[in-house]
Length: 115
Image 1 (cartoon, one colour):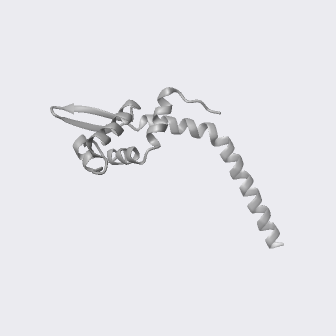
Image 2 (cartoon, one colour):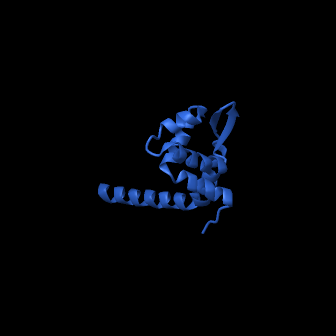
Image 3 (cartoon, rainbow, N blue to C red):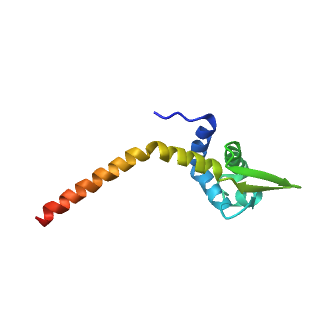
């Protein structure tokens, strides 16, 4: 079993929520003002959006830059890249082994059909 550091757990938790993933997707096209992000989620309101954004900021997936009364939110993809690469590296051997077994089965089935 794999155990993650506190920050890795925070990143996985943050990525586990559809609204937080949507915020990250919006920020992938460039920085956005907090108010613009709030407008995307009228169903949960400003407080709900800010709660989600705080989780993203705590896990360092978004960086907030105040500018007067405005807050610019920037995507920081590095934490996502780090935990995803770590997870894939831990599981790639099993995935590769499964893919190789599947290939062998498919090849055996093809030989049986052509005989």
